[in-house]
Image (cartoon, rainbow over all chains, first blue to last red; front, side, top):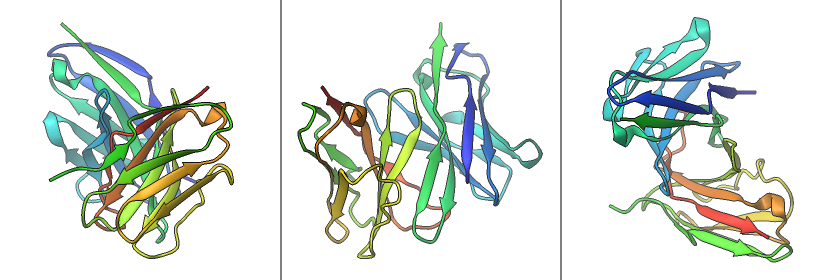
Length: 115
Length: 115
């Protein structure tokens, strides 16, 4: 079985500060990992995904994540937070069974950006 | 181009009533997924459609839940005899193909409240 754990349901940073959202995964096979962002009243939008190529993955809006197998982690970072980054962020792992690519999501981290 | 759309955006119903939720995937997307997001929890996989193949219903929580999709078009998720624990946001996602590296595009969701 695959799962992801997001540490911290709420994270607050100052504008311009480093953003670090934590995600640890559990998988019996090499995982494919995703970060999605959900703005209020909108659907989930893909930020980035890891598919066993480069371990450092760059996504949209200045976000990036690094796959660390030894730590079973896929933390999301951004060097400088902006007010528009305030949203909920979900880490997900996929399990492709040949019958669908079912995503297993973490419980989400609400990011608050303060002036 | 239009993204994934869902209707209604909000639904309030009384316990015991049936509800029908609709998803319009992105044109040309062969794969379609339904997920449920309960308050404070991550998304749970419900059901998966791929083309004309038999759907993967392994995530449906009970026989009160059913879904249909005609070809590669609209899908409807039906919940019969709704219960208060069915209250959640129901999200639909579609993708161009189904594979381990696919990107699922999500709709804005339907917020269901069962009184």
